[in-house]
Length: 108
Image (cartoon, rainbow, N blue to C red; front, side, top):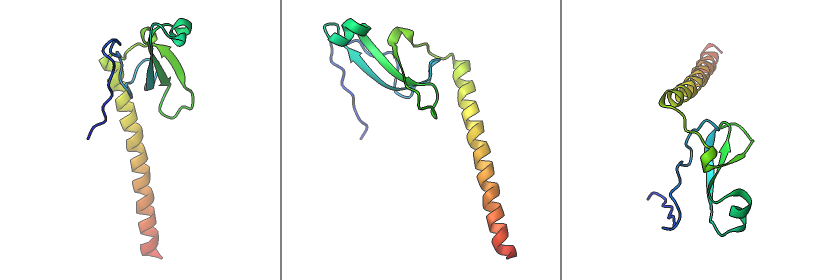
């Protein structure tokens, strides 16, 4: 069963999704500041997003919805391709290590 998030009808729907890649980084959380709340008075009402610059970063930044910029299809494709390439390099290294281990046992 997929988890479900219910958004009250009087709230606007968030523009961005969890784990979405943006120019600011990867969205890892979001919250809504209602118009009549203390936080909305301080930061502005609407959606605020928690973003990490990249998946291995400890840094966490917060942006109002209007500050978030989506990636173009080309930018998104380039990011995903680079991540696939990095994972493929790691797989190649691990396969070589596995071959070295297997070779060491058969020659010993």
